[in-house]
Image (cartoon, rainbow, N blue to C red; front, side, top):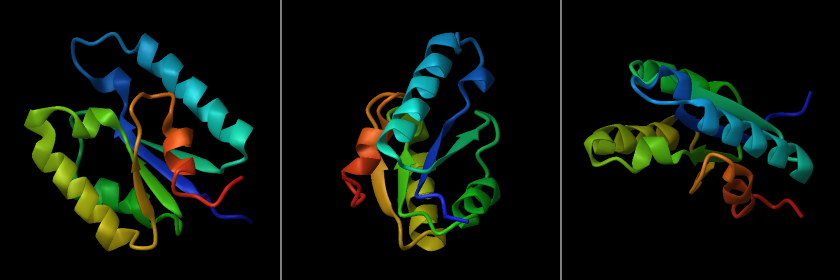
Length: 121
């Protein structure tokens, strides 16, 4: 069995209150297809917006020896979530020290972010 090369961490858009998740869900699906097109094995680690505990994130990070962890914009772009972003980066350092850390700019470009750090042609 081959290991998953990439873990994408982000918020599950269906759990964000007062937010229409449909466009983001569609973009995430497009992004997952890009991983397949590039031949990159990927696990999607969507976090409930109200459940961002360190234990849940650490469990996702320890599932496999990922080559790269992509941290989504929902986690890192909002100033009020800065502390969560710092925790996620440091959890990656602790629980997946072998993994490169990449950042996507949209829900559908995680594969491109990962490719910057993977030796995939």
